[in-house]
Amino acid sequence: MIRLVLRRVFGAEGVGVLVLVLICLGGAGAGATGTERLRDNAIVILGGSYQERVGLAGQLFHAGRAPLVVVADDGVRRGWSQRYQRNLYSVERIREALVRLGVPPGAIVALPYYKSGTVWDALAVRKYLLAHRITHAIIVTSDYHARRAAWILRRVLPPEITFSIAPARTLHDRFFLPATELLKSIYYYGRYGLFPLPHLPE
Image (cartoon, rainbow, N blue to C red; front, side):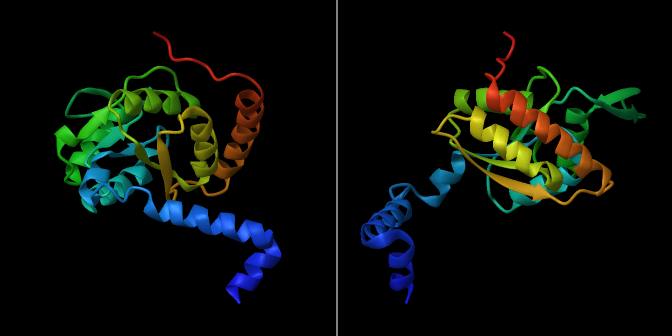
């Protein structure tokens, strides 16, 4: 039955090609153990509404999905800290929250701040992953932001780096933020879909 459906959809030759592709995909990575593959992974928290993203990143880390949590720096200050007597940046808040969740400080990497925006996060992530030969990133972001994040990452990351999206359910306004995200997506598809991507400052 399945073969008949495939023949009708893809044709006789198409079925052969499809089967070959599935066999190749099934064999990909067969020469590496699970531990070796995980060593090449990193969990990446994108900048923005970090509260819901931190918890999911902590869960993924403790589930053994990657040995490292990389945090993009959006350059935004997030309120006064009585402990430090100053306003902390998002990246500092995220680090503190991850440590409270049991992630070792040595497993947390804060990326440099370049500019604020998803495209700049993606460029900073690409630079780090390439420099450290990390071949797969688990991207943690809010659910409303997942589609645009995936789109810009497909444009920014080279073919040798794959990624998956881990969307965290937003804890904030579930009407205003998605509506704002729609406007941002329209801008991104026009700006970065039709024109060259920016470059990180030296």
